[in-house]
Image: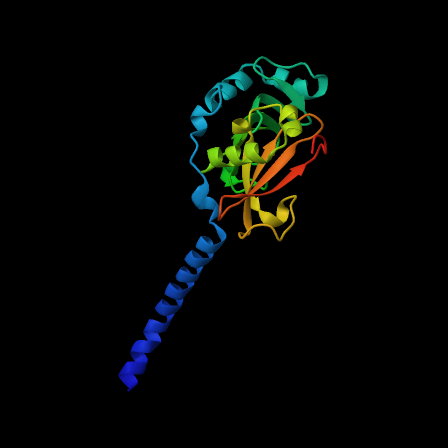
Length: 223
C-alpha cells in the first residue's frame, strides 16, 4: 500500500501538468487561438531601406538628423517629422519605419494594438532608436474582405479610399473592439480597418467561426 501511495505521490504533479496542458489546448480551440492565425513576416524584405542603410544615412550627417526635430528641415532619406520621430517610410496598414530620439532597444515584441502588431527596436548611435512597427498578415484575410464587401452598402463602398483587400486586419481581444460584447462566440476578433471618406469603417469577424459579426461606421454616412 505504501509503495502504491509513493507512486501516486510522484505521478500527481505529472498528471496536474497534463490536465493543465489539455485545458489550455481546449480553451484555445474553443476561443480561436489568435497566434495560430498569424503568418510570419520577413522584416528585412518589408521596407525599401534596410536597417543598415538607415544607420549609414544617420552616420553620414548626424547633425542634420538632430536638427530636423527642431527646424523641420528633413535630412536625405527622411519623409516627415512627427514629434520626436523622423519617418523614413510608411505604408498604411503595413508598417511605419522611423528613427525616434531616445528610447530603449529590444527584440521584436507584440504591439499593444493587436496580437499581430509587432514593434521592432534597435539602439542607434547619437541618441537615436531605429524602429519598425508593422502588421503581420493573418489567415482568412481574403475571406474577411469578401464578407465585408457583401455586407457594406453601396453608399459605404462609394466612400472607400482603398480596396478591401488592402485594409489592415488586427487580431484583438473582443473587449477592446467597437462592437457589442454579446456578438460572436470567441473572446477574440479580427478587426478590419477600412479607410473611408468621412471616417473609417470597422468590420469585425469572429475568430472561431471566421464570420462577420459587426460593422462600425465611423462616418455614419451611406448606412
